[in-house]
Amino acid sequence: MLYRYKIKPESPLITPLMSDTFFGHFCWAVRYSRGEDFLNRFLESFGNGNPAPVLFSSAFLSDHIPRPTIPSLSRDRLKKFVTRHFGEDKQDIFQGLSKIKGWSKRKLISVDQWYRLKNDYSEERLYEEYLNEESAVDETAFEFELAASNVISRVSGAVSQEGGLFPREKIWYHEEVDLDLYVETNQAEYGDFVKWFLTDYLSESGFGADKSIGMGRLSISLEESFDAGMFAVQDHNALLSLSLTSFPGIETYDAFYRLITKFGKLGGSFATVSPTGGNPRPFKKPILMYEPGAVFFSTSSLNDRPLLEDVHSDGRIRHCGIPITLPFKIREDQSYAS
Image (cartoon, rainbow, N blue to C red):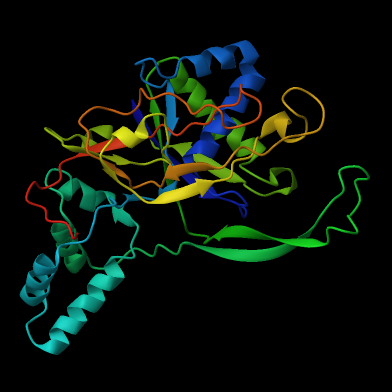
């Protein structure tokens, strides 16, 4: 089952609203509410050909999803598109190419546009959608604030004389902004638990870094009217990822993607005490992941992939890079730039 939740940020965030961080918070909610044995059984249920019991997307502007990461139109197709829609003289061509340059920077596509394109997707058809739209979505729905913080000695608890200051970014969402979060559950027992986790636990405890001092406050509610059937496609030939993606064997899939390196950090009690006791070891090994919007040329779901292991010096720690995906059909005569 696919659900959609609405998120309203009520404070600045230090940590971006990414799928793997939602998953990490969920694991701690399982640990605190149902115990470590239940958490271990939950983690062991991933892979082995079984659909993941629970998956999260990253959060996107309301009624938008990530734009598929596929190459631009070939030069010939681009020229034909520009002359057909803008004209053939130099000024018209310049105007058309300038428009397309702006479109190429967009990372989101509206759900309405996706509904019209998902059965026959191409960059050319997407450009035609952009031409006909009344107003473009403002993807700069947040601003960054660079703040200086003191380095605190873990021994004395006081400001370190040697460490000085270090910069941190705060994410401030505009007041009117709402976000969408998609959740996939493949075991009925987790439906109500996920709802409790998002609408009660996470809303009360906060998200990401510095939640103890008021960062990461979110108001989250289930969108009861959401119909997952709107994303259905017959005879699809590709999958669009809504999550940060990395799993064993990912290199065997034909895909288009953008890469991001995640420098993960343990949460919950592991942020202050090592998993095996003693001094904290909160930092995971760097993980190379596909950004949301990655396109996999596959007709089979990816939700049965295993979790990532060997991501921390403690072998029990794992990382979720299994994506929620939407099926779609890329136009077969689509030409890509080399």
